[in-house]
Length: 374
Length: 248
Image 1 (cartoon, rainbow over the protein chains, first blue to last red):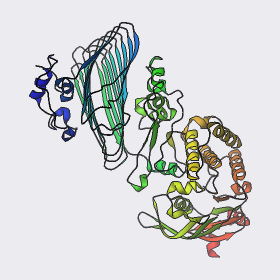
Image 2: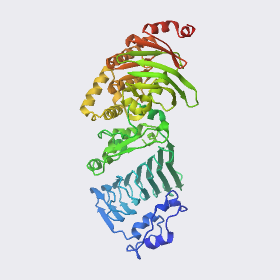
Image 3: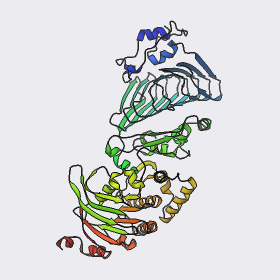
């Protein structure tokens, strides 16, 4: 069954569909599907509407092969409402993939990425939403990893609409490793949703999920993270941690961890914390003259990169630093309660600077809120 | 410079803590406020700073003629008011030096000035840290994070030195200080103090006043200033306690 037929079979997303439980499905506009699907690949086993949509809508595929032992950087940008990218990473290759924002989208933008990572290859995938308003964006990643491969997936969402990122990862070879880190800084009516399913299908595979939410206004975030550890996956390791600070009474977060473990000798953890900023700390800062709505400027990058991305290679770092097309974006949070009428401010001059910012990583390292991940 | 008239304030449950404070502080003056525990000294500093836990029921507080009570918390600070609390708050993750720079730039922005140059700020903070005999550890740590009681107080004076306020309200700055630290902190206060500034010291002991000479000493009890006099009053209080004042 092709993607179009499969979509017709499963229908539009509904809240009673477990994959879309937390998503505001009413935000999905009425879609006009083509009469036939150009891609005739079989999608019988695909259940996620967002994964099928670009293919069903005949997104023009872009295939990028990275040769064995190569060391490459790539920037990907979708220039239509629907995009489909296939990345084949060769054995022992190292790749840094930066996904740029789609600026030509209309009501909805849906992109699908199929990433095949061969033995002992390392891939860094990262993207940040630079705050261009897009009403609705889906990004789906299907990642298959061979033995010894490593995928580091990093994402920042700043809102300006409704976002959904879904990842289906298959750790198929022994020693495969997946690291997913997301940061959502939302305000207003922004809404960001993550749906992940990580399949451990070999021994000594490792997956780490680490999500942070800073929510103000009436923003919403959700994190639906599933880990499936198959039989014979001895010494598999999986962790999931979602920490949220709610900066307003109307913001909300929903977290759903799912662990399906079919083997004994494994280690799987999940955690979720939710809190608000300390009123005394806020008062102290404001009492030193820092205005309620002034962003905190971060100092120039120093040495935080290795703290945040201890695994990141020297190849990736200068690459990140060299891209300043992302604006420096101040983020602030106004609070409703008088006693919390301060704004927490974080300013990032994106990826490189942000992660390299001592302030940024110090927050993540030293506050009780963020400490567990480091 | 700072004028407090008939200031009455209460906490959330309606309990009135300040019951009519009157205090006039002129430029160049050092005032000491003494009083037993629970008399309202710390509350006074917090009310002036605008702490949301307190409600002002009556009275006025003006700084150079401007009504502080109508200002936001940060505006009060940027207008020249500095409040050092008895227990400085720890803010892990917020770098101490960056915080200071941010606070200074906020004040400069409030005053219509440009942000301080990095080199200029570096020079400024080095100078002030040297004055207070603070070592490099203060640079890299979070605001008051993991500091001892004395280190926190020293850090408060560093903030005061950087922000250069017109009126400083220092609540028990001497508590937790050893003899050497007391000398250093007092030296810092004296250094910052000038003819166009004023300092209000809240203290329980004469020892700080040996280093920072007050022009006036006030006794605060039951939410009111019940006695004001010269620096000799502090010595008398140290000797006799507070009960004799009410008996008198």
